[in-house]
Amino acid sequence: MMKKTTNKNHISHHAPNNNVHGSPNNRGWLPRLSPRCSLRDYGFCMATLLLFCLGSLFYQLNGGPPQILLDLRLYLGNSTFLDDHGPPSPKELPFPSQVVYNRVGKCGSRTVVLLLRILSEKHGFNLVTSDIHNKTRLTKSEQMELIRNVSTAEQPYLFTRHVHFLNFSRFGAEQPVYINIIRDPVNRFLSNYFFRRFGDWRGEQNHMIRTPGMKEEERYLDINECILENYAECSNPRLFYIIPYFCGQHPKCRDPGEWALERAKQNVKENFLLVGILEELEDVLLLLERFLPHYFKDVMSIYKNPEHRKLGNLTVTVKKTFPSPNALQVLYQRMKYEYDFYHYVKEQFHLLKRKFGLKSHVKAIPSQEMSVPVPIPMETEEPIEDEEEQDKWLEDIYKR
Image (cartoon, rainbow, N blue to C red; front, side, top):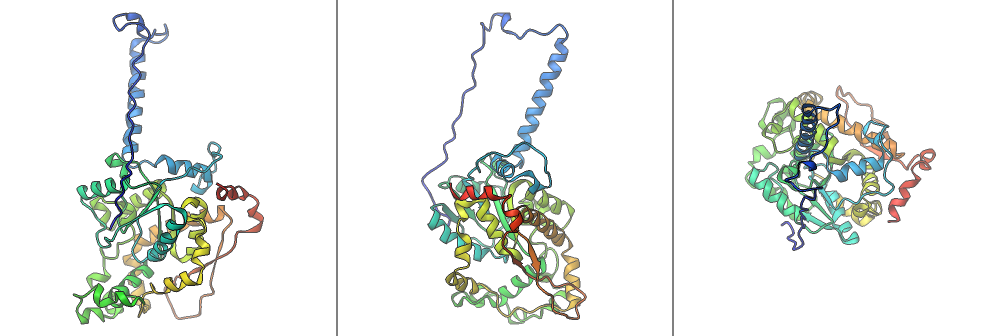
C-alpha cells in the first residue's frame, strides 16, 4: 500500500502589485509613446509579448521539462545532451526532492527496490511504493488521484510503481524528476515469459500462486511454438511493452508505431534525468550515486555486499531457455520499434558514461551457429584515470 503522510505541500499565492504612479482617472499614468512608435506598433508589440507568454505557459502545462531537471542538466554540462554550448553551469547541484521511478517490468526493478529500501533507512528519504503491479494504464480520474497522493507525500520522496509515464504538470502539480532502467527487449520478453510460468527462486511466491488460472498446456508451451505459431502472448501488441512506459497514458501510446516511439524519445529527453541499461547495472548505480547522492550515496557498497547479492539471486527467473535462431529472427522483426527505442536510450546512456569517464567492454562471444547476434552483458570498469582529474569537481557532491 502507498504510504499516507500528513505533511502536505503549501501553495502560496502572491497578489499582483497594483501600485502605479498617479491616479487611474489621470491620463498621465499611461506610458508615453516614442514619436517613432505609433499606437498600432505598440499594440502589436504587446500582443506579441502576450502570445509568447501564453505559448510558454502552454508548453510548461503540456510536459515541458521540470525546472529542477533543467538545473541538473545545466550543472552536469550540456555535452551530456549532445550540446556543448550554453551558459555556465551553477556551482551547486540542486537537490530534487521529488523523484519518480516508474519501473519497467522484468528490468531489474526488484533488485533496485531492494536497494532503495536499505537506502531510504540509511539516508532518511521517504520511499513511497505501491502494491499494484498489473495496472500501468490509468483513467483520467485514476491519474489525478495518483498524482494527488504522490504530490502530497512527505518530501524528499522517491515514488516507485509499475506505471506508464505520468505528466504531473497537466494536472497542476509540480513535475518530478524521473529515472528508469530498461534492458534488451528480447531478453526482457523471455524473462517475463518464463517468470509467469515458473517464477523464481523465492519459495514463498511460486508460479502456481502467481498464475493459478493458467492451464498446464499453456504453462508448458514451447517458446518456439509460441513465437512461430503466432500465439497472442508472443505477438503484438503484447510485445510492445517498454515504449509505453515512456510514451505515457495517451491511447496511441499502446499502438506499435512511430508516433508512440517518437513521443517516448521526447519524454526521455525532457523528463528523465537518467534511463539506464540493465546489462550495465553497475554503471547505472554509479551514475545514480553521482547525480542523486541524497538518495543513492553508498549504493555500490550495498549492492556488492554478499548478503545483498544473496537476496538478489532469489529474484532470478528459473527454467528459462533460449529460442531458436528462426524464432529469434521473428521476434526481432516484431519488436523493431522496441529495439529502435532501446538503441536510442543506450546511446544516450553511453554519452553520459563517456562524460564521467566510464567505459564498458563486451565479453568474448562464444562461437556458435547463430544468424542472430545474442546480446552479451557488459562489465563495468573503473573511471578512466586520465579523465578522472577533469571530473574532480564531482567529489564536492559527496561533501554536502
